Image 1 (spheres, rainbow, N blue to C red):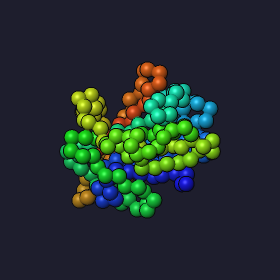
Image 2 (image 1 turned 90 degrees about the horizontal axis):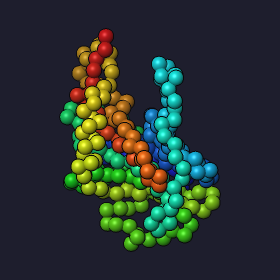
Image 3 (image 1 turned 180 degrees about the horizontal axis):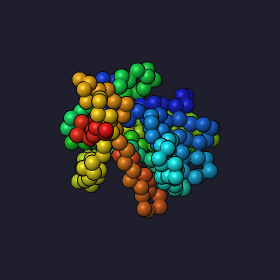
Length: 228
């Protein structure tokens, strides 16, 4: 059984999410976006989300974003880990991403109309029943990784309804003038290809037993500002 899975929503020519990697090291589980954050679900039960990079002017910034304890199992002996919700809306002025060439990426379809793609990292205890009938028609397991202790780490894809709460978070965060800074001379280039056209927003729980949700949001030309 594979010990890692790299995945994204869309296609190499139409990237609609960040590129994520989920992997297992014995009994520790990790989830990392390509450039910014890492989720660590340690065997000890110490679970956390932290930045992977701190810029020079942010040297006094705490890398740790959020820390919580492994919750108890819920339905069907499943332990919830963390969820990613993919922004279903295109930017007003879509940006051109750098070419995606990694052949190991598992490409996932975009959401159905009126829905959003949610990706859940779950830990299935050894007594869990993973028969497909145990999941709804909007859910499917797209990856399984085995821990040394026999538990399985599941990557579950789900098409969720675009509730007013989800729409509100997306609209609120994208209206806060998130900016990609570029040097003014780059405006003379007819086409610019970008390293990053996404931003992550974290919804941290305030109730024990619930888990963080990472909103993976799209940026566009409306978010570009030229410096100098």
